[in-house]
Length: 403
Image (cartoon, rainbow, N blue to C red; front, side, top):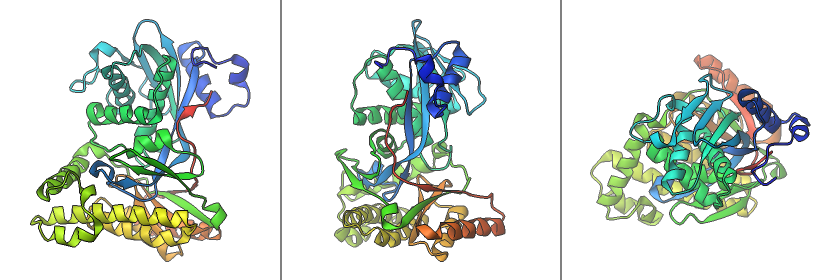
């Protein structure tokens, strides 16, 4: 298909897979088939948390869970947005009214993300026109698995391919980040969108967030007799509530105080001397986390390349302690998940994502999955917490057209 033809009816109804269900939903809603269905995955960050807005390193991979966008062009310039998962009805967006300071009526909440992508594409001078969009996702929202980035990247890929605009995957990720920063108002780095747009199946993605250099690192837990569990604590987080921005400002202020462009420029070997120059104890903790976390990314990549996956476990646990104590973005549910997994035999565990809720990771032997999962469920029940959702994760492909 060229990206400008309606989905063939026979192909659309054959198989009944997720993309076909998304296309069916579009047809029922708008009365005609979409021209295509595009998908982008959520992500797990193996190590390298809160480093991306400090020009540092991260090591994410894409999840099998994805957000799908069925889309077709409109001749009148209007963009209509609909979610199969959120009962908000159809949101109509007029491009001329797009303004980060004044989101159009109905484009608050989930719809702000695709509206922001449209705004970012138009701001970049790209000739995107009207479209009908229908969204369906199995990336859990608020779980620290980048559901927002998946929605942004899938929308950007759909709109650009509908209108024959050729962008590289890093360019697509940058525009999606622009939408979240400037339109939605979350001052995130580029890691989430890059993982969603650029990841490859069976690999973790080493990302240098300053140069945007990427290295695809083989990451095959099954071959090593291991499994990586994702523990969704079911605690929702909101990174737009000021906590994220406070940490970004603290890091940037500390870098300026140390005479650095970014904390990425502080070598690990010089950390103690640099911390001694800072008077603010909050800045001391934030700097210590970022610099040690960058070092952990380097060490984990070395172990993965050497095929020593089990040995990454202690670095995961060390990273969690840093996020909990120095960066202060954990919560009781995340701490309990990590401690319980480790006590039940995990090689290591840590929170993943922005924090304040969301998900934790646990690296375990394959045959320990049932015992570790049961231990976590029992601990949450005893603490009076909502039952967590525990799944195994393996690296999946990044954004692509799926129908």
